[in-house]
Image (cartoon, rainbow, N blue to C red; front, side, top):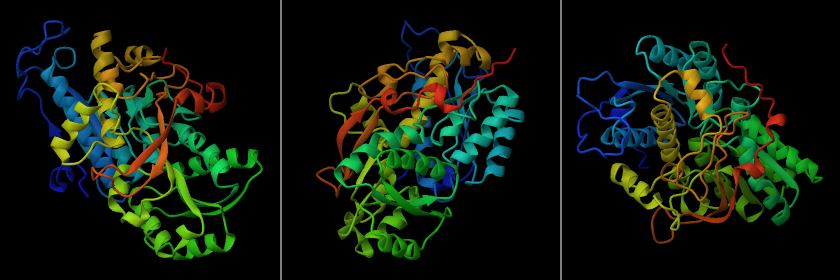
Length: 417
């Protein structure tokens, strides 16, 4: 699978330095990078570059690197070059926290981005809040990040699990039925997705069973035998990245695709690439999609990513890209790196179309700092024409329509004095 830079580059801490090709700047730019020796603005990114989520994490880094390169060609942040410092959380909470503290205390970063793993993202938020550093959660979905565990300094680009779940749940009930079996990863993200889907299912009078499965599980036969015995209308596969690949391969090897529908929330392009054609099935959500012919900027972004990776852009590429641009845009707007001032400015901040790269320009909701992004709902299929054309979008759902109201999220933002 093609997923960003070679492992030898991303497997260790990498630094993307500014100043290589600044070139002629637009007259309208608010700042000008004056010299290569100018003190850079440092952005720290923590993601699991090794382990089961490595493919999607590496693609977030690729998107962040592209954003940094573009920003440095066009005036930087506050007229200063941007430097991206990348650390591997190794899919471990303690390591993620340690790397976050290192980036803040030793490397003196101005902004933190990450983590793919929801549990790590939540733990990182405790550190960034304590240190008063702006924190953009790029790809950790569990609701508590912008819910009961929300913080004044934390903003999230990817959707909540409730947004993705609500966007697909009613379609599954209507098309396939109300008896579901869950394969759920046993950590914060999985628990959150299942809770949201169960809430929608039981409200419609449905029933369910399922298993909580450790991350990194390779053998799914025992779980699939139990699913077969239950006889669901839909197998809900919440497993992520490499775990999702293994579970879906075995799902079709068991012939269960002939007995029940398979579905869930995310079936990311990284995972779609990694399964055989027969496992490219089911109804899912995407949080961004590369084939949006009528949306300005998407074609150019896709081409820029493809130049770096050899493959179409993924939602993870966009998460990294949008996270870096969020920090740069608000810093240039406010002419400061002060985290409290930037956080106030980001409350209600709308991404411009050239960064949003979707039909609507979503904003960070003021009450909980969740980006109200579009949910792409559709069906997986084997490649048609382009090798990455493996998902047919059937509906676009506005984030505001499927997000829980702020008062139901449990978020109570408390700002520093």
